[in-house]
Length: 361
Image (cartoon, rainbow, N blue to C red; front, side):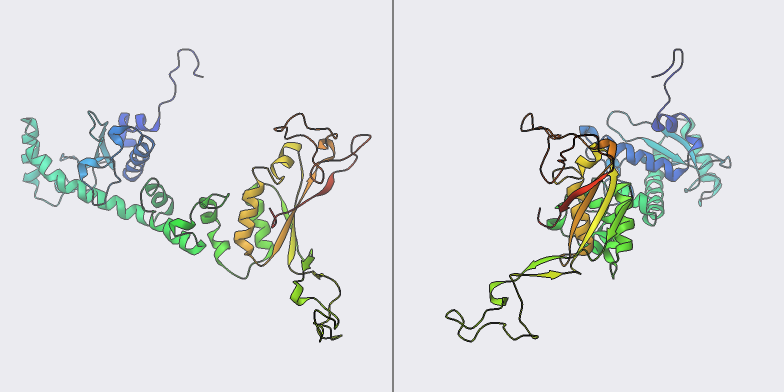
């Protein structure tokens, strides 16, 4: 809240129109494009397009003109005017053009244009500004092409993604529209980690670093946790009998197995997170908001071959007392195997009992 007798700080757009000479040309156009994207819900701005493409210049977010003066420019931007009556704002550049001290035309063209403007005749200036607008637009587009953040910004809200997003989406494997936005984790997160998601071999160290950055807290990967794998009926050992007269997988030392399942030590790993507060612990429960994101991101990294589980530890002061649910929406109620501990006194140590299998949910 502003203090008495003090005006609130002006927005960047207001500063641009008040003091355009203090702005870099490229950043000024970038700010105006950002403002147009933010105001796209306004019907007057719904048809505004980024500069430098094949759209009608009258439908672009800003109209670009060249400075008409014989004075050597000291800034890249000579002026800026807000849009009125549905027209886009105007930005006057001072470093490029057909006229002016840096213009390619002879000086008398600049002098003739200045005299015409003094007589309020803007025909010649408006004609040359058709070429100025296109030159400035292509110059800005060339500047933005190899600057990844700017290229990404310009692609927001467009029907087709920008080249950077399209390339990274292909690297990750979500370039097709049918594959986009299908996971709990946002596609932008996958693009951020496209370097790790696209290279091999995959390592526990890279997974640990990626998850620690994504969650904003340390994550430990424990390899070779192991787990039981069910054996199909046609793969189990059977002695000769009515169902199988010759027996089935019953050669000792070759293919005989005892039981309906086998222990696999290398097909499963565990993620360790914590100790956490009670609210943080609840977010990582199977119904929490972070559980699905973590599961999908890990699955994208390790692929379908490996199973994994999540072990979440709860800090000792945060361990709640067991209680029944007060209703269907009671998220803090005790759930067996998730957050239930039968204690007669406050817990002296952090609890690491909660282990959630992530491949079965």
